[in-house]
Length: 439
Image 1 (cartoon, rainbow, N blue to C red):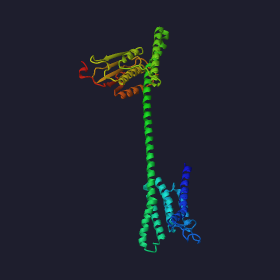
Image 2: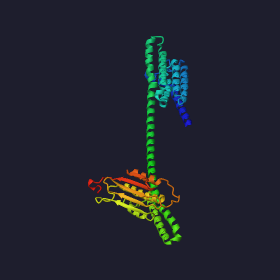
Image 3: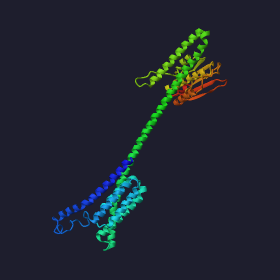
Image 4: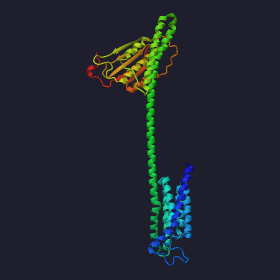
């Protein structure tokens, strides 16, 4: 990158020197042709008398002292442009000083010395903000005004004849020259800088939009991962805990009660088949090559859930419903899924942490504004064996589901060593007052 910048600076400096020296060298020929067009002839005293080619007054002939002075000034000023990247303000002032120093040369081509000044101003304005560069710009403009005024006075001889009037005219010409050598290049530089800033702002905006989109995608992925983690935990906790409990019972009964052991093996097989089916449904949701099949898990399905759980623990179901509306009327599908998973997780926790305890599942659907699901179990009557670690993932998953559907979850110990989980679901459309709780 640094090498490319140095190459660019060299091209700018060399190009300025070539253009300015080339113009200075071509001016005498152009003026001679212009004079020939005006007079129709070169003139008798122009050639053959040992004098130089007839040129316009003040235009230095090629190789003359004035011409050499201007060429040296142009080359030095162009060489200063090599430092415009590292010291742009100093470069602009330096070119202005060189232009002012060359002002005493009697030449009508003095304005060419201002070409490196204009280039330096463009580089300064495009690389530094105006708030920092304005002192250097004002100083450069003052040098241009002073140099132009001095050159004009030298050419016109006004320093000896009517100096005050000629000074005012020369300063006016210097101001105009400063506008052309500093003001207009500065305007071009500010335009270039503004367009560059606009491009940078658009690029930054596009980058910000891309980052925002990436953040949204990451958030969506995080939500999906959390949802999959909840589903996997619910499936594993419900089915595998029952399999582990029944396997322990089979181990004790295989010698003393073979018939019960065979029945337990059949139950383990049923539970294993169920967990495989649930895992297939979950994997099917993640596939993109076709629609996934998924059983609808609703509050009505809690009845079958409780029935299947009786092989692992004593559990009772109590449904408090009203005859004026169907069960779970006005409860959305996501809310019903949350209730189903809450009961499923609560029963799995009761098997793990309160073995032998009785459990009661209550569905209270009598109120017009809400439906309440409760799962309560007593204190354990058998040893837990120390193998179940309370990781808290199940309760956290229940709370996440409840928050997702705007439900209220309460979970905690009961008197006597039991545990209660209560989930309150609001109806999407409250029932009419006539269908409220009956006495």
